[in-house]
Image (cartoon, rainbow, N blue to C red; front, side, top):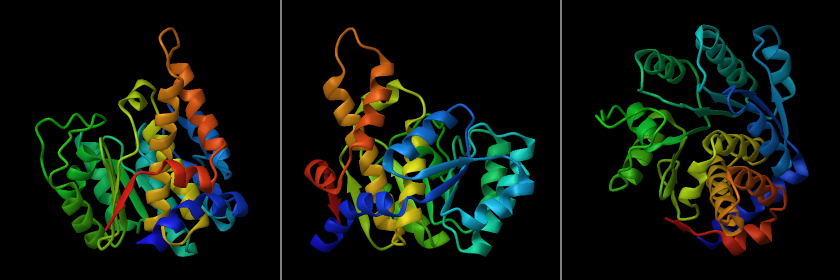
Length: 272
């Protein structure tokens, strides 16, 4: 697994060299954070909700991130269309199914997306991934994560095979699988929950990585680990008297200054 481990660090170098354009149809609550984290890692963010320009944008974009956090009637139609255009053009599509299963409308949209679009990566917390898998959890509150890591790797592997994709499950221990390989990522800290949007920003990092590296398993694992490392660095600087604005700033600064060497020094990933 040493070759794969080295490749994880190389993802950062590839992003900075290729400067992929990441098209987002995303959560309006965190759109600025997504743009900034994309810039910090060395990619270029592009945000639009206008269907009429999807084809033009996707003709030159490197990847597409779909985040259904602030779903509305227009999004229910436009994200499927955008995903299908990206598929036609051979551009990787990343799905962040925020709140999947929390409401009937969200469940229906996710089902429609999975039926009509092929995703390079699906990234969500355990509650969202379980909802996609079809496991009902009475504690699922949608955006909040229902932790159950006993079978997390098995769920990720099975779901990855079912949809021919990479599944990234975020939680106390992040899990990434392409149905064969599994990365268990032990980077991270509960302090990330003190600011909104870290999950959305993680999807932007995944979109940046997939826009630069065609091994989407390696790309997703590196991207998820980057956010965990950034959280750890933010926690080191977080002190009594400072607030959650400090956390956000430290996350962005850590990603901005991330190199392959710094990543390899900090990553805590079990590969199998």
